Length: 330
Image (cartoon, rainbow, N blue to C red):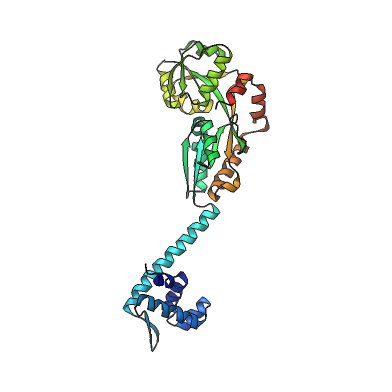
């Protein structure tokens, strides 16, 4: 584009040109826009020189558009509408009414909590887009630390010295079996009771699998993992087929396992109860949309996590050495 033309096609000049066309008078247009008539006249004259076309000429009843001026008016209004739309949308971004948030969470949190959580969030913020991806708790922390995501939901025992952390919810692990399994007759079991049976485990990098493997090593047993699967739905289908037993969060089982005719057994081990935390780099790192989602998750967490449910310090304090070692593995 010709640089002189670009300089003369600035927003103010377009506004003044449209004002002249709407008012039919340079003087009235100058008054409407709060600019001296001589300055308005100079801008329009410079614009005509840059375009090499006459846009307006004075008639007996005021300023009259030429054919070139009519074309210029059409495009000027289009440009000004676009500018107005840009301003409006950016203001909405600043207020958080529009935006994009990168959210990362472990599988248990996604299955148990986020469907209803995001439903209520989108009901109030339907112009915000959330990029949700499932990650292991360790990967959640890693992506937040590197700035590859904005907000994370992960196990509380995955530590980070540079992230802000807020308690969110508590997950309680249960054992899932078929109703004809030998353990199904028991109301409660310890994890030690399960180690002699084949297990259907999640992927080896998952927090639950690492936790169970670490515990089995601690009690000098071997975790008999027959199969590794990538999600709770696959895990439940394998258990339903009689291939083994498995551990998963209680609410995930209630949502997708109970309708399959399977049985969940309470675990007596205190460390089967695990806290999920919200992690982020600090509010100053979040967009307005990110802050809205953070506050939504925080308020929801405060309604569900009571003081006696904030298990992170007691959980770590109650774990034997194997549990502390496990915390560094996630």
